[in-house]
Image (tube, rainbow, N blue to C red; front, side, top):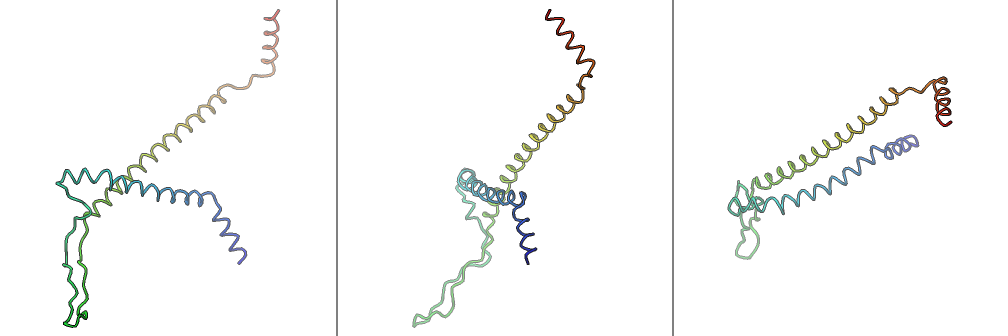
Length: 153
């Protein structure tokens, strides 16, 4: 049991797990922002353009709602049943949410890849510069010192 707890502790405290947890939390908050963007900014103008249609209300009724049936004493004989609907308007709105999130993630990953490529290129250039300019030999250093001393006289 002690080995299990140690293994779990090592797993839970690894950097990747913590990074993933932070990503999930930020993703949840980002999802709320996107939902608000779609519901409060994008969909109202689309609704106006489509003649005042609210996408949340778009649905196909499969079975109408039925009210409760009461007898003469006021006892419920048949319970009320809610309508059965296909809410395709909410589906459209959720698809738009998804597309915006996917687009934002695409641009973020593309930007990170570009930054990573730039950093890698700089490292390669530094490595090439270090390899291209070898350290002068001891004789060259001595001759350089002599030259500099002669210049100063």
